[in-house]
Length: 242
Image 1 (tube, helix red, strand yellow):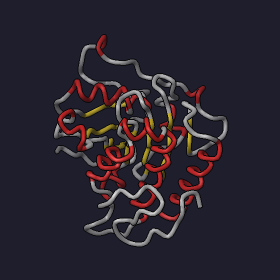
Image 2 (tube, one colour):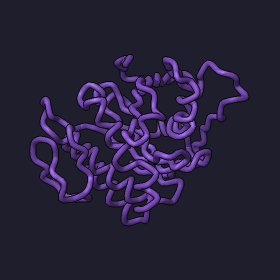
Image 3 (spheres, helix red, strand yellow):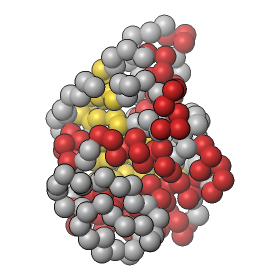
């Protein structure tokens, strides 16, 4: 697995590789997204499996309008950069798709704000139905950096959960965590049965729990999302939305 560390202007993408769909997922399932503050696009460093990554880009990475893959332009989706879809006032949760109720959105905001205050990690949530998305515009809106996690919920493909993580997060969180998280709460059977909001809520809680755990060998070894589940290590010490 070829992993490149990122600087302040870069971000890593950790995407799903659920066990149930292992035959559909190539063994190399990481790609690097380098944001350039002076350009309106971003570069993708992709090794092999181009057709597979095209699908992933359309699902999650197009939320940031990341399209510079070396393939026929007629075969790839168009990028999106629509600042007009951004809220007028700053918010850590943008629900363009309408998956969340106001109450659910407020719960996530409270969780995100508490996490950032306590740990310095910046979790940002974008719910979309491509191509209806602000796209690349969220980069500057959220000031994405090495301590950012951009969580894109998009049911365009079978797995609804997509994560873009900064370099510091990539060093602190095991790579397998993001794949296991997507496999548990993002698979099509889960979100179709329980709803998109349930998948989003559980994923946010799981990320929160992981990032609060003490460093060590077993950090984030369990995907802790729903209330009542025990974290992998350290104390949980919080309830969702409080």
